[in-house]
Amino acid sequence: MIGRSFNKIFEQSDKYNYFGDQKEREIGYSSLPSDREYRFTQSITNKVDLKSNWLSKGEIGPTFYDIFQNNSRYNIWGDTRKHLVNADLTLCNLKNCITHYPIKFPQKPNCYKLQPQYSDILKAGGIDYCNLANDHAMDFMGNGMLDTRYSLNELGIRYTGSGNNIDEASEPVYFKKKDTTIGILSASDHYRWFGAEEKIAGIRYIDITQNGWWNIIKQIQEMKKKCDFIIFSFNWKMKINKVESFAKKLIDYGVNVVYGCSAHKILPIEKYKHGLIIYSSGNFIDDYKVTNHKNNLSYITDVYVDNGNIYCIKIRPTSRNLHQVNFAKGQDYTTIMKVANFTS
Image (tube, rainbow, N blue to C red):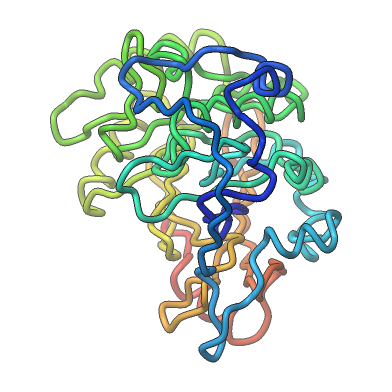
C-alpha cells in the first residue's frame, strides 16, 4: 500500500493534458479501455490538496508522496529489505495504482496512487510479483490500472489479476526457480463493478457465494500439467468461514499456497492437507495512523519448497513505524506470534 496516502485529487504533476500525445508516449496506448468507463476528456489543471490519512496527535503528518519528494531513495523496507531481496521469489498484494491519471473512480472515498517516477521503490524491495486483483486496482479508473501494468512491465515485475478483458485478467504467470516451476493465479471478491468482462478492462472478480469460481478449478487442473507448485492470491472481504471453505477447496484441487489479503489485520495461518492457507498477514507497509487494532503489524511467511512440496515454514513478524517497516521486536513480536501461529 505504498500509495495509501497519495489521495490528492489532482497532483501538481498531473497538470499536463493526459489525453494528448504525452499519454501515448509515456503509457503506450492511445484509447480508453472500455465503453463502460466514465469518460472525461477535459484537461485537468486544478490543484486540490486533501489531508493525509496519517495523523499523529491531531496533526497532519507527511505522506509517502512528501517523503519521496524529499528523498526518492528513502528506504521504506527498513531491515526487511535484504531478506526480501535475497528470497528466490517475493510476492506482494499491491493496493494502489501507479499512474499520473487524475480521475478517481466515482463515489469511491479512498483512492490511492503512486507517482510513476517513484515506482522503482518496488524493485528496490526485491518484489518479483504483484497481485493486481484487489479493491484499489481501479482507483483511478481503467487508465490507472493499465498504467500500473505498464509500470510493472518496465520494472520487470510480474503480475496477475487485471487486464483489458476477462481473459487477460485471468491469465496466470509462471516462474522457474531451480528445478521447480511455480504458477500463480489471483482474484478478488470485491468490487463487483471493478470486474473485467469480455470487452471491458478490469480485475478478475469472483463471487465465491454463487459457485461462480468453478472456472478457476478447471484452470488449476490445467496449470498442474505445466507446473510443480501453485499459488493462489485472493483479495477477500467475505466472512472468514466462507473464505476458509473456499481456500480449502482450492487446496483440494491442487493449489499449494492460498495467499489471502485485505483483512488489514493479522490472522492465523493454517496447514491443510498438502497446502498452506495464509488468511491475512496484516498491513506490511502503509502510512495509516496506528490504532489500538495494531494495524501496523504484519508478518512475512517464508515457504521452503523441495520437489514441489512444502517442507518448512517460518514466520517473520514485522512492525511499521511511520514510513518504514522493520522486523518486529519486543511487544510487537509477542502480539503477532500469538495470532500468526502455524496450526498443524
